[in-house]
Amino acid sequence: MRFIHTADIHIGMENYGYLDPVSGLHTRIQDFLTAFDRLIDYTVDPKHAIDLVIFSGDAYKTRTPTPTQQREFAKRIMTVTRHGIPVVLLIGNHDTPNTEAKANTLDIYTTMNIPQVHVIRKPEVITVQGLQIVGLPWLQRTDFEQIPSILQTLYDTVSPKLPAVTCVHASVEGAMFGSERAFTLGKDMVIPLQLLQHPKISYVALGHIHKRQILSKNPPVLYSGSIERVDFGEEKEDKSFEVVEIGKDRVATHRPISTKPRPFVSISLEISPNDLNPMDTIMKEIRKRNVEQAIVKVRVSVSPEQAGDIEVEKIRTSLDQAFLIAGITKEIIRPDRMRLKDLAVKELSPLEMLKAYLKAKSYDESKITQLVKFATRLMEEQ
Image (cartoon, rainbow, N blue to C red):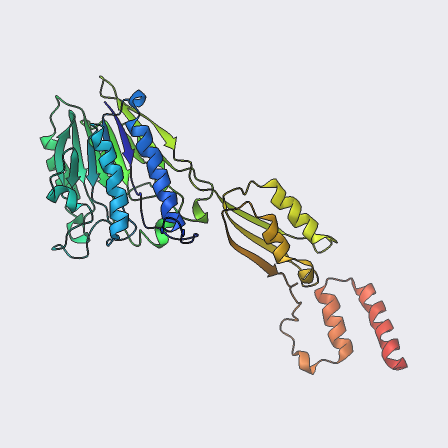
């Protein structure tokens, strides 16, 4: 058995882009669809012999995707099923409506009874292509305390005669959160890892957290991660889907396949106050980086004296190979001013203030005495 494990496609993400006048789609939506297409192309290629696709939740960015977003997702799902490859769709939190009476974003596939598409919207065990799938979709807080008993009931129904995997959309103990925490996770309830490590289960396909990570090796418990970068917090993360193979011994092996996501490049440098040619320094740093078709931001820290030397338009021109310039920030670093703590400065004479300042600067007493003498002489001459 060889299958694809993916999750968190999030069609509808529109940060760091613009409206494409030709297609009418936001360019970032196109990025996510392009990544999705790479997954689809790999899946339907006969040489890879994929038996099944397991999607662990969150097809769209919002619970109310536009008709265009729904069409684009459906086109790709139907491409897979037309090649005779079943697809299992688990409901994630972004697929779940605010009220129980409303349909979720994937219910249309159940309603139309589309062949080869299986939607898991409640905890259950289904069998597809000879593989048992223990499905645990996103649950509300009111149901969370029942997860141990829910999972045990599901495990009890798993037959030892067929291989089995678990598919879950949730936060699991031990996972490292990525930049999606601010807009996705909030105060999630966390499932103990040991609840997912069951002897009948060969693999656990997780969704919900965008950073690919392996939480356990026996059996493999892992988040496949999202298929496209969301922001600069994911700049150093590759994005991928997982190819999983279960052998006759029921042991699962897996490996990631990159979706070649849009590069994010942040260039940050602090110019030395002694640098006589700050623009040369900035240009050299930019030339070191591959910004072709990347989303780029630049932050330059300079002293007040150097601020006028920074040519923002020249920096922008040097980034003409970038897909999008997310921002060019010029940050002025002002030296910390010394404060004479615990002294009533207004009550001090100029010479007393000078002496206090020199002490704060850790001058030795002989030097302080000499400097105060010079200062006294200058004041007397005035």
